[in-house]
Length: 208
Image (cartoon, rainbow, N blue to C red):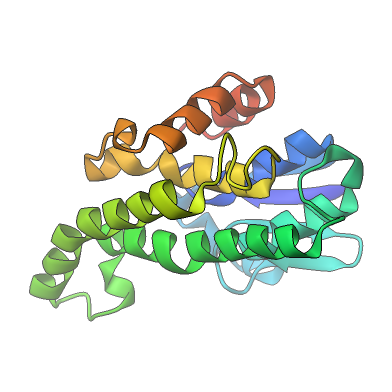
């Protein structure tokens, strides 16, 4: 059985959702970041990066959201979580997921984790990053809304892991005082996913 490590309020929600939509048999393990469980020696043996998500399989541990999403989609092809029959569309899915990982998530992290980029006593730089973060996040969402989301779902009419990943990052918008309604396509996608029983089940597990 798969073992999935997650924490509330993190991007692990996307992979957790994918496991549910795939109908996978898995054991969820919730970590408490407030008590630094992600830095505990036991967990560092699982993921030396000290972050979530992490997915333990019978062949080893997979980390990083795009990789985990790809693994789940390919391991459970009957779930239709990726266009495995279309090389171009599969690449577009991974392109979108990579953008969320490398750009949107990083823009978000500048609000609460500025210490990753400067010394912790450099309060001026940290405050400047906090101030800039909402603008950068909003600009990223505007780009996705206007140029990257192709229809009812990210890839158009075809549901994929990108929708679960976008849903996850869209849930962070209130923390930047950004109303998702500014992005009608993304707001509608989120609304439709909110109504799914798989989403309701997993979101309840991620309540802080």
